Image 1 (cartoon, rainbow, N blue to C red):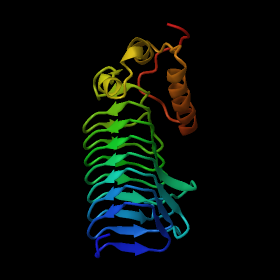
Image 2 (cartoon, helix red, strand yellow):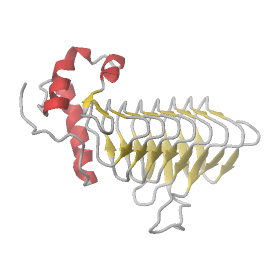
Image 3 (cartoon, rainbow, N blue to C red):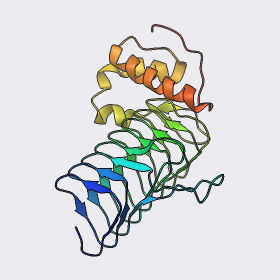
Image 4 (tube, helix red, strand yellow):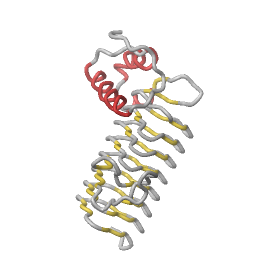
Length: 231
């Protein structure tokens, strides 16, 4: 812990965490093990909510898992409406990222430099939000998908998809290679391009998890082909 780091209220840290210079951590804040938190990050400021901009955030919890990299000038804000702002395990949060109130960031997510998320966004397992991307409140970024550099994401992005404004939705093949999913690439391609439900149980579990979040969000999604069974 750098001597210039500031800890306020109930900050609970696990083992082998590194906190760099001039970082501010405001509790209640629960952090797991083996995290790296860069200089001048602010974790625990109140959420920026226009309906209640001065709400009492003193009891609002942020929970961060283990193995995360949180780089310099990152802001992670307390919840306004839910119980927690959540960041899972092995998440890479790059320079200058804004993680808003009530965000839910699942394991293995990458939020690249300058990405800005609005309130109550959900970024699901192994998704990527590319540099300078902005994401509308309550949006869902599906598993293994990517939102392109500089994109303004106004709808939900389905799993395994590449969202590039002005182009048709395509398969995020980089994620299939990275996470060992090439053996089910044909099923994934039919799902992304034609809306056909896969038959592999693990893929169905991914899609059902996304669909639950999608329905709860109340938002539309990019690329809405008819959903069919089988291949």
